[in-house]
Length: 346
Image (cartoon, rainbow, N blue to C red; front, side):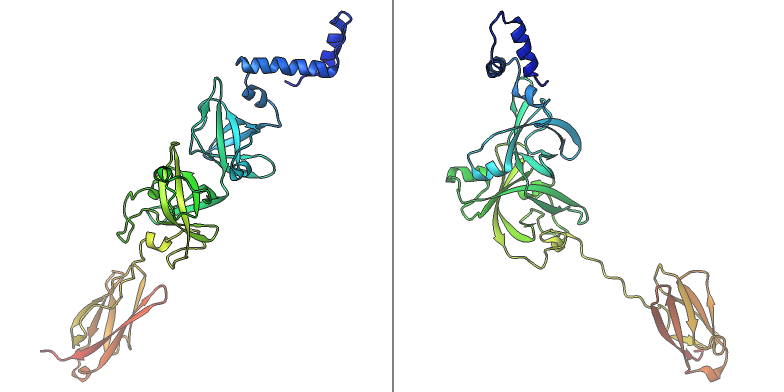
């Protein structure tokens, strides 16, 4: 709780036996005592900061569970980390490496990725967070659902030593490296877990970031659990990319639309005088049947089945050689016709 230095000064003045300390001396004494308690593990920086509005925040772990956290002021050697990384304190075992942390530091809510496994202290955990500058959208194997992952990206000007590349996934040709959460979906950055609808491997080879295409030139889990590091190289857009949805090779991952079957009226094209033919059309749509001059030369009758009808020719030899047109009208506006020639009895 906040300390009222003036009140403490008055107590010291009253009980000081004539010895009066200055306010600055009292503050220094308090700070020294507090540092001793910190050094002796009697209290922790977490205990101090978690109760101070300046440092306390409510964060969400993986966009669901809310937890209180305390922000720690810290400087990092790498400029990109110093600009986009922060450290926080949490109660023990609240989150782990690879988790997404969403919270508002100043005016806007930002998404962070836990960069390393928690540093476990006596009564709290300390975590390093990387602010995700971009989102990456991955299409599910079913070709329908999408998954959005926050991604921390940095250039690869300071390239790691050869011995490190196998661990980090960053290769000699990498232009950028990035960190992303490692789970059952994003594991496709590392290995194929199945096949696409076209039979090709479903391993993710390319991604779109902020409208630009990148080729995955290296991808491996790093030493921290729950994270994947990516080696990225700027690439050209491809016709299979869906720029609007932000998904690379989108049209290679979804099943092609099956063409509608070609509809036609099925039945004999010749109809003997005095006989009846049955005609059908294979559709789930509502069908209305019609025929030329119904009742004059031939008679049309429905059978009670949506896609089926009967056509009967009159017994009249003068009709031999004449033609009639049978039409199926579908409810969505399509029409299909069949020409029927009236013939003689054999």
